[in-house]
Structures are given as structure tokens and as C-alpha cells.
Image (cartoon, rainbow, N blue to C red):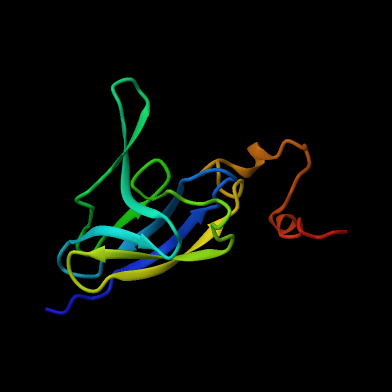
Length: 157
């Protein structure tokens, strides 16, 4: 049986703050095959140690992050989502000074078929730092700001 390539959508990473040594990658991985496929490991085109992580709620009510050495299963005909507050691709030992400000490549090693490589665009801290929080809640200036205005903030006018 031929293994069809898994698809990757909504890939993104967050800018690494100055002095920080960790980063993260999120993406949705879709599996068109009739059998589940395991994501066994990940690597990146940047200088970082890459691990597959998940989070769980502890008995104390705090979030605890841990490495998932066996990886994650992408269900047959379904998808697996790396997302904030859930499973994610963790970048460790990152040098914030050399972290790219535009994009980098991430490769997932699979239980079957060829590894898949995708581009993770880097989002500036603040673009999505609050997850799904409404942008209006973050605008403390009191001004109504429409989406077009955000693109013009780099103007020197």
C-alpha cells in the first residue's frame, strides 16, 4: 500500500523573547490514509533541541508540560492538532539572538512513509500571545482599531 503524504496546515511559531531559550511550534497535521500514522519525532532547521510535548492538568490545578517520547498518533482520515494549551512541538536550548524573525523549517519523522517538512512562520510576540482572546480586550488605548491599521504600524509617518 502506498502511504500518502500527511498534510500540514496552520503552522506557526512564536518569536522567542530576548534571553529566552525556549520556543514552540503549532500546526494541524492531516492524515488522508486508511490507517493511523504516528508522529515519532520532530527536528528543525534552526539550532535547537526539538521535542514533542503535551500538557496535563495536575491535581493542584496547574498545567504541567511533559515530553511525549512515543509521539502522537494522527488518526486515519483525520487530523492531529499541535495547539496552545495542548500538544505542541517544543524548541529547547534556543538562542534568541539567532532565532529567525520570519520563518524556519520543521520536519516530522513518521512511523510510515517519508518525513514531512513544513515551514513555520514566526509570529511576533503579541500577535497571538493571548491565544483566542479577542483583540479588543488587548487594545488599552480606547481607540477602535480595525485590522487594516495593524499592517501600517511599521510606517514612519
